[in-house]
Length: 85
Length: 149
Image (cartoon, rainbow over all chains, first blue to last red; front, side):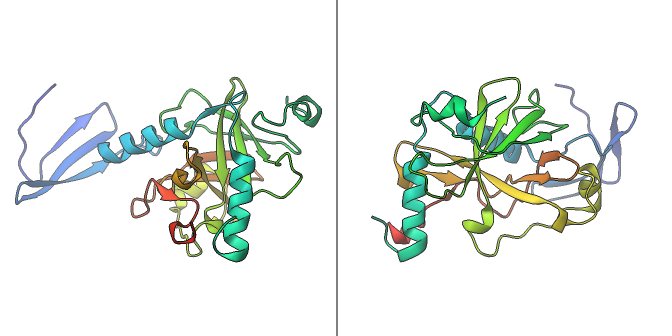
């Protein structure tokens, strides 16, 4: 990993059009400003990881038997008259 | 392409498809960037009753995601896509979009959750889709209200 030292107000560039600026540092936290093209997704790493993991958990194979019928029935039950079957 | 006939013989399999709508996801879904072309179909239960579920099915694979409208799960679900994001979807305003969330099926029905943090935004006119991120909402929210179980 490339490690660079920067002060608040200073920046680094990634490629031609991504700029990461250190805005402030306080109490062990670093506040970053990021300028990037629209097609570059910028996210907190843990958020991306959690969403990738949840997509993987939600992804199914078409030939996989899923309890969607039971789920739809249960769901209708809870919506219509409170406690299900 | 899947036809109702193809699936009618196998009700225990995932889907009986009634109507298909094609969507192009320029960025794919998070963790699934190589899948860009999907078909959205309402899921029809084998018992003929109505179902709130849809299936988002990759065109070039047997991969699929069960979806449901977040508005059926929480009554006050709100998202405010930025103008740049609306532009990506070819939409003029958020009201042009259909919002869905993925359903994560687990062994017990009570454990089934929806991902309110990473909704799927679809523009039925431009046929473009993407996965949005709304951090305040949970990744795993119970589909069936725990108080009602």
